[in-house]
Image (cartoon, rainbow, N blue to C red):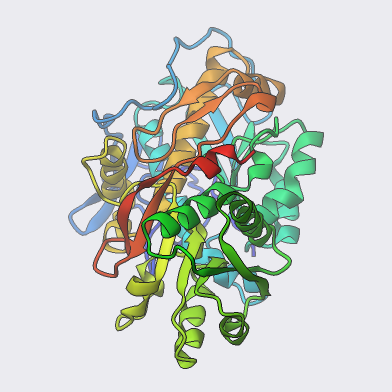
Length: 470
């Protein structure tokens, strides 16, 4: 079942996990101040759905939080007169597509592996869009309407969802996952449409229809291996790759492993593929793998990997790029082994550390528009929030250039310049796609169940090898 949210929504929670509900919102009449509402952050007719005590009611839209500009990374220019109506822009509202994944549907097995991260990503994205709309919208004038489509992390469903919205949006604000992006990248080019993926595959860096954010999976893998050798005690050990079979995310991680081996000179014990079932612990042990570089689902496969290896009295160090660990919700409460074995390279700074300039508005917006994320933190909210900041920066640029058409969005992307994330996420310098270079630094994390989100920052890391990856 597909759902469409034609507004900027903020997600709720169900049970102990972060399980936001995403019903379609459509009001027959404009609401009145004080009227009950369901979705925090929804802005309708100048009223915002806000928590008041234990109730959710419409109140006058709040003024913007003063800790950050409405569109960090972009310079808001005076609104041009007579901005032309185009598909996705009716003269007052800018519609942005969103191909997400928040639902678990047994008909689509991959949805079970990636839905938890999808919910957190969507919460972060919509929290920032709610901030912008509460401040008046893009350029202080144009509200953003997010048209959400469920994909179940399934390429065929993404193709259907894309076909439903491609002619009614100015861009696709999120495409969830490397397989989905790979499936749609040709269509984006044919339709002259800009899309922003939740995928760090290096394949997107120079694509003129892609708005990438963050470093690359290949760079993350290189960085975490480099750190483990130089400071993690793994010098001289045997490294093996474990990656998702028949999955572009897995392929990207394996590419990073192969590149790192060529630059860092460590001993390679083998490269192994895994399906959505338990990892091949027996094979890894037999190959003498002291260190396993795992490009797998943090939700569905990291816990079985730790469990299967423990049954064999085998406790390798596990390294991975950011999606290889989801959140503390996947860690067994009595599992000390996660903290001893698992180390992750990620883009976002320590979740909740408000000494980081970009984290302060992020946390303020989560408290206001997605308070359930505070009690059930997931570092993926940072990724979604940073993506929304970048999308808004691009929209600001297109408005400043007086053109929200598909061609205008591509022109804006080619001249966007640097979008800053104030330390919460890597800054990106956009320009001529052929000359783009992705950020190459990472944050190295260990697993700590007592830390909000389950990841505890060890240190920032940028290897010389990662800088060389192109």
